[in-house]
Picture 1: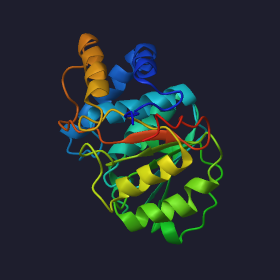
Picture 2 (picture 1 turned 180 degrees about the horizontal axis):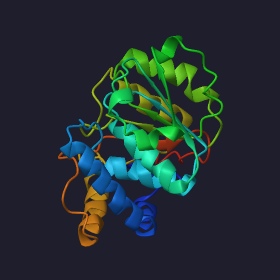
Picture 3 (picture 1 turned 90 degrees about the horizontal axis):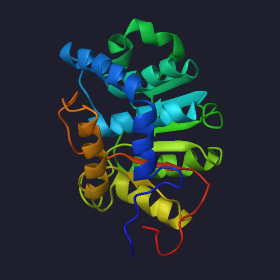
Picture 4 (picture 1 turned 45 degrees about the horizontal axis):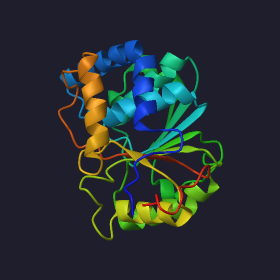
Length: 244
């Protein structure tokens, strides 16, 4: 069975094209994020996966992005800068803690709303209106089973979804969030994309080489795992010989 690391419209080649298209604004965003790091903001996303999130949002121009789990606001600020650069869109962040409400720069907040609490006990009014969903919260099997049953099935077909911390190793640990998610994708024969060093070293190396040639050399955040996966609900299924 062939390893598959491609979303129907997100491949290594299309990612590199996105870097080409949005290189100038990405450079600016990286420097703004670097300033946040230098001022002490803690980072959750590694550089390539944060950039892939930013580039997808620039390309797709979503009206409504929802982020489950923000912690100190690192992913929040990457998303808000993408919406700012698009000149459109709103972000809803849901988190148990309100740390991000202190750390997110004020100049980015006009496209942002924040709900504090457990997303599992909140109303789901936000689900059907979501164009892109980022999940980076409680990394447990139980939490994965909740959002796989209660959130993802109610998203519109074609909704983009990003889930962090799936591929810290070549394969997710048994009985983990990542294992539950990948099993769910396999059952639906849905493709996913990752630039994880552990799971897709060839993909990550090609992206890294391109970034190096374009001068994106100095890391903003020192992490190098890039374990996020990207997929979309519904859409084109993988063929049987390619499904993971």
